Image (cartoon, rainbow, N blue to C red):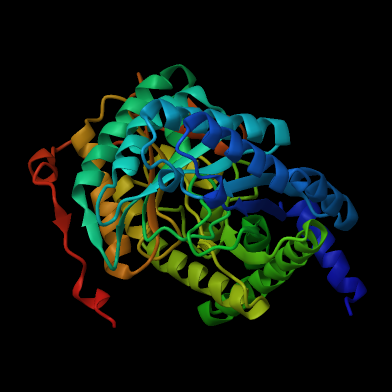
Length: 452
């Protein structure tokens, strides 16, 4: 039974501390849409998405009204399109992408993920075809998101894919140059990509998932920051316990919404992803949580240790609250989407190298980072390789979402609007790794991958 104090506390979290359900994401399998005819394949995909997700937005709105809990985004993820594209031409892949975009628009959802390929051990013909079309697709669609998994702890790192993604990112930046190179904000390069992630741009409906599923992403940096500030001068052990209890409450709310959506839509409940996903709004920042712990500014000495403690406490609180915690679950550190991170970059406190160190102990990786528009393909690939190697070596998901902002240089700002925010263009090491990248082939899997 909820007490009056519990209800009031939740209301305060929503009204004053930016607590929300960041997304309800419906996963939809496309396997039964297979066809050798490109037009028929696209038509079947459209029909399947429209049929499966026709009530998603209205259901989300009803739950939001019923519980008074903001549900910011309603999204769909689909089977990685590369799995559906065997024998399909590049034009056929682009047709599928436009079909996804049209369905998303007609359903009223924010984004649709799954224009994706998994190439950690090598390329299929279909994955090569799909990857080659990513720049065109992201420049011609509004809601389609793309991801490519180039590595895993079990397989190692496909360096040919890493090199290709450097080229793809640069081309995407150019083709969307008139909109701040925003196409790159809808493209993620992964190691160890999870199959049940509800967050864009990396969401796809994995091969082990059911026909349809409901996954929910919860976010509450503002709630955690307020709890840390109220704690005052307590010990770090006490602070970790407080964060854990706060994460427990947030996850419970997410599970409530997920089960309600599952029941109303008659679709299985998959997971709750408890990720402290910030927004550009003041008071909704992961960086400000770290500063509330006692750091002068995010990026200074001690930042990685503080983030490691935060991430661990969030995960512990989440798994106490629900047996179906999945996805990424932890603290996100996207620069453009976190006003505290933006401030730290602008002041010089936070560098790309420090961000890379922080990704070893938190969720995701180098996220929503703007770099100079003239950054070479080899340097982009080198940054990807560095970040992906952290995921492979540490048996965790890492990802890269870099925006080489066309026409921008260090100190400039590129604006994306909405939840994507704005990013100061960061200084990077421009020494070329071209000789290393061009060797190609695979970086073998680490020795600790041999667990069978």
